[in-house]
Picture 1 (cartoon, helix red, strand yellow):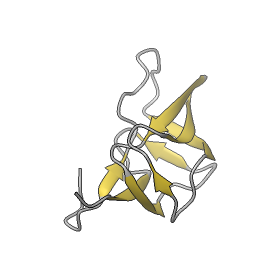
Picture 2 (cartoon, one colour):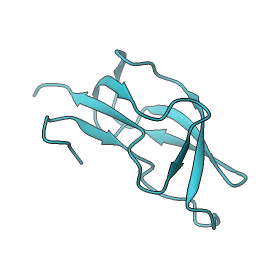
Picture 3 (cartoon, one colour):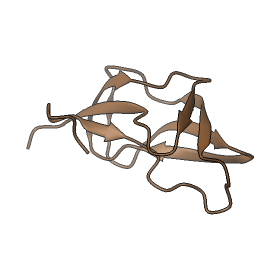
Length: 88
């Protein structure tokens, strides 16, 4: 998903099957704003109920904005960050 500026949204692609909750918490960011990330690289760890899940980069590029800081709650489908994809 993009926001009209060619940025790609970072979301939790697959919600854990055994999680009944529709909300989670960002536990730790592995990448910082301004960092180059590879496609499918682990960007952050989130906790949903008692399940820990890594959120992966949907594309290679620059992590331009972290929307959900560490310890922030988020709902299913929320954008956690934005990536500006590599040209090409």
